[in-house]
Image 1 (cartoon, rainbow, N blue to C red):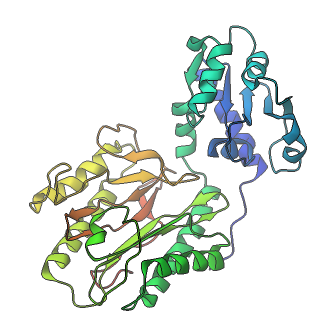
Image 2 (image 1 turned 90 degrees about the vertical axis):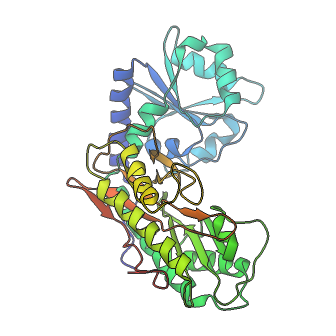
Length: 377
């Protein structure tokens, strides 16, 4: 592993706040309320796990105010975050009323789209519902374009996960249980990146036809198809990678589907040009699959889900590579390329690598696999 990148700096977060303020002004909002979400961490650096108590930040044109239970203030003061006042509420008080007071009469509040409905309901009792607007579009558009510092953290995480996959490939032998593989993945992620797995799927045989695996344990038998999907987190940023392969002579059917999958994955990459709509990448994958007599659309055997999803601080975020998404691809956007092909009750093949958009076109974080028995370049 190369040297670990520096964490996101306070200066970068300050720039994010200023861009959020500009987006607020353009959208006609007077303030944005961030909840205990990854968007709170993205803009302010404060990491706080959500609960029934409101902990968040109110961003206006000229202020940043954290909102928190009074008994948590001393803890928040010790945590990494941008400077800002802290408005505290006691247990018998209503944080929504405090938020309304800070907002002021007649002003419009854009809400973090990851806020729970219970918090929205409480706010709607204090602030006219027509003055509560969806802040999701402005937040996701800012988060979707990654800085060089963000991409460096993601590259480090992706490098760690690629090495985990290589070690898993060497580990799997007849008799090993999927639960043992998952435990090994977590331990190896911790050793390489300092963080465990954010998720890990290990499927054998017909279970690979279920995109997110099966409940319960499995035991690997010689010749089984293997699907491993996992990721970790570095400096708040995710990795995500899937490999599907066999460690024996592949069947003709598996080899054929694997090669179609790889062709569809390459078609997504080749279609990823700055300015094109995200949905055109999904279309490109489906054209390849349909040309080989699979599908069409979401029919099986074929591709049952979107061709990819954005990646960053969340494992699934904008931009989504799906039909109907006209969002233009911009330099700095990062997303998965995984047009899985499912053959029901037999097997599935998912090859997943992550792309980041450069000024002149797409760039792989990791290089795709070579073949049904060679999952690595």
